[in-house]
Length: 277
Image 1 (cartoon, rainbow, N blue to C red):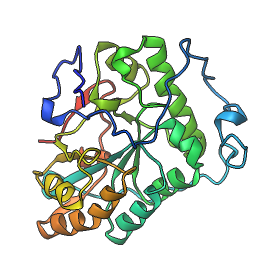
Image 2: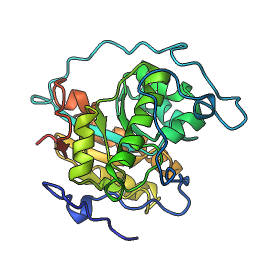
Image 3: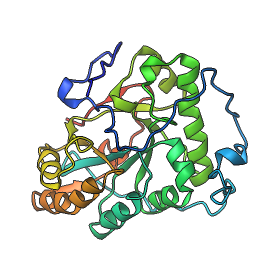
Image 4: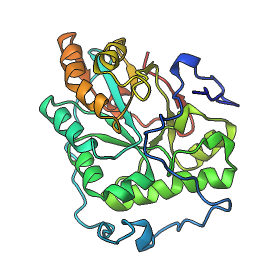
């Protein structure tokens, strides 16, 4: 695997904390056309972009939007908090993961791919919102954003913003660049779209080492305020989560969303966040 340099970053990600290219078995996602198609500023996307190729998963924007639970009063300055974050879904293992989180009354943040939301349909992301989880933008098709033009970066982020907002009514305020690769253009476009860049300070490498005990051990290497990188597209990760939750709960940790980790205050668009120290 080749580590990707986050060119142009004000504070580069340490090699151990960079997200790697997905393993060969990870769901493939093609990049957009060389000339990025226009994305409507308002209104619904074409039916072909709201459902599967056979049309069975198409849905009407605004139909059955979820109601998020009341905000929790969590003071992460006084209690031990950790933000578990899951990238690259939703996929076939995401709903079982939501079942696990619900049993443990744990909240998390999901950085979703626009294409995966369309393929999966609106049900999973609506459930995330209804159960108090946070949604973040992980691009449309998982390209290296720092290698794209400004127009294509905008296309990747805005298209995903529209799809998720139409499915859930939620306008996402955080994003995570695929592979952690960001630069001045990614930062500028994130700022333009009102998105803070959220990276991580604990990398489980669950995409590479798909062994439950290894994932749990790495994820447990946290300190209060940590942001942990995981992927809900791997069954080994989902299997590891119950053990991880029990282990960290025994150490007195509360599992929070990114917004809760930062005290409910809006994160600054364009700014990079690694953890709450």
